[in-house]
Length: 243
Image (cartoon, rainbow, N blue to C red; front, side, top):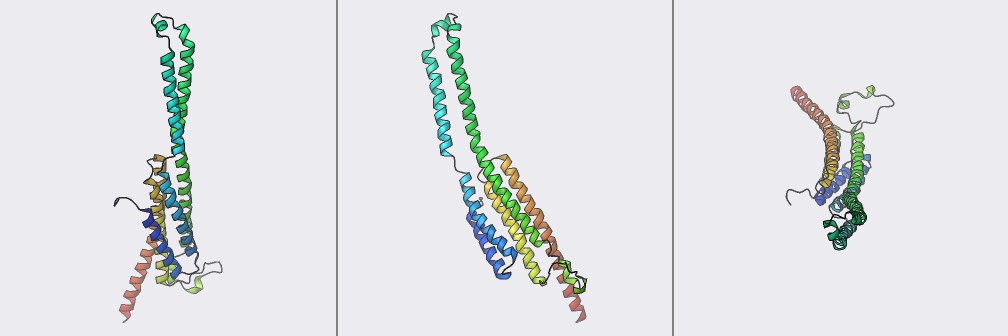
């Protein structure tokens, strides 16, 4: 169990992050995104658990078809006139044998279709959920898009009428960017929950795509945080030199 990602822990961490964002940036759009993501996380945790459960009705139908196939084989063996086959009279039994073989082939095709139907249904649901998580990642990225760390050094006169409002202090901007990076990391963890419930290679590939997207977007945010840290160090050095 220590090597498994617990859905409850991911949801709990996301709830705490939502509270931190709401307390620090009350009324901000990022707080609303975090609140929506918490609801999605709860739903995703339930759906990820459901993916690991078998479709009992579908498997019951497969079992019935398998029994029907076994019954056809048994019927063919019982009603086959083996003496005519031994004496080379194949024509007399060819019609019944052909019908039985065709019916068996149809049953086999139906069983194969139903056996793969469960995987296809689960795959469709997971891919839909992953698309929603991917959309959340892009929304978080949009919220941090205009958070430029270098604007702190810019004079107010350099701004135009259409420039976005940038009223955050250096500390607030750093915290805002860190919250965005944490949200992206947790979105990747929500996607990873599905990977523990299914061996479907297509689903695993889609999960990796979401995780790679979150990692890539998070890397851009941490670059901004690094710039802010460098600016803070420069300010501290300059202040020390003046004193």
